[in-house]
Length: 228
Length: 228
DNA sequence: TAGATTGTTAATCGATTAACAATC
DNA sequence: TAGATTGTTAATCGATTAACAATC
Image (tube, rainbow over all chains, first blue to last red; front, top):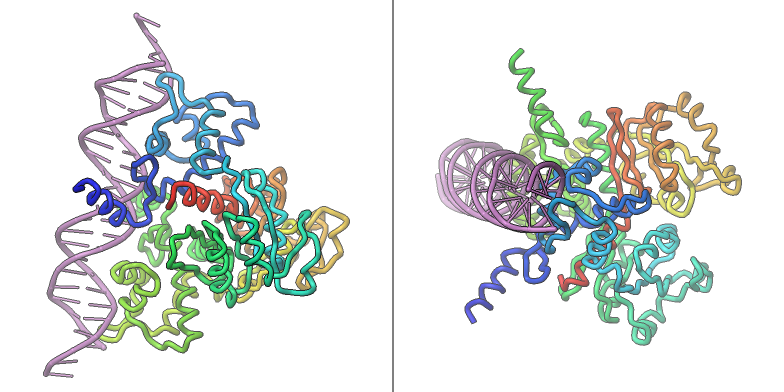
């Protein structure tokens, strides 16, 4: 009873911190996982079978200590005196990230960005399944993007009822974000990837990632202006 | 003399930390500036003239303390008993970010993503000037995107020599990233915004921002899988 | 003036790095 | 076995929050 209280307290206190096997994983560690995944993929392509935290740290420009700490939040995948088996580590991190779960996605908004995202092969390569594209413009509805026929946004609710979707990708104008997000969540979507300029917040318990392309350009601009 | 040494040491020790008026600004603060800028823009659109750190903190889901600390790295823009003048703050942050410097950009790679970026209005709204688009495919060269005629990548070096560009935006396949980046830097570009899957690193003193669209999708996937 | 709210210092919290015993 | 390298604890560093005097 008391331990349950402590546990809840932990969740509240941790804020955005996420749990893995009961362990609290700092968000900053989670955000590093895709980067590890990327480098490990490259190592595999280069035929590297095993790697030490030290060798990896040199390639990735992080400390070996951090690498070992990070992996240990998930149980530690290495072997003393040997290092890490690259393929195994790659698999494990893919597992942790849910890349082997075949999450189904739908893109809402088939403008320039929506089309680019639909054609973005990396999403598929990472195991995500694009199942639908929606738009409200008669010019686009009915056209085929990446082998998928664009549907009218009006049929979205019905479609979601019949075809469960895990992730909604928002590439709609700022004005439409909030309503679209609500409808996707009502339709059972578990997570939202938002590319619109508006920052998305939701009451309901749904995962959200906001991506702001112009933020990166502005950060770059700062670096240039202030002379790095 | 000694203080110069201390100063240099500071830069080295700070790693990626950037300086503003001699003050060391933590990278994490810089990355928050575009977000402030976004919210302030929204306040202006809503006709809000002034705001306290407290009121802003509620909207943005950060602490008022952090807001005041952040702004103070740049000198503090508020007034005791009053708060912050929204328009003034917006201007100041825009200044700090270099948004009023009219940085000229060129996009390399006119595939789906490159085209989406060329049409991404927010870049323009933030004061960036798109001056050229390059590609190597005969199918695209000569076509017009967002009012700009796509040039062949072969003429890029000559073009850069005649028309200074500040920021190179990379939307090329992974295999071409490194060479393209080198050529842009040789052509005098001061910063690179890289959207390709490969992580870009440069020897030379040039600002870099890597954007990995799939990283956000993977982070979202983790949140869904581990139940936030 | 009194009330509000900043700018700034001090305290706390969290994340990174260092160190080393465990062990393959 | 001896050497290498992890997993993990302890030390350091940095970032966030709290508190309050300064001041508009």
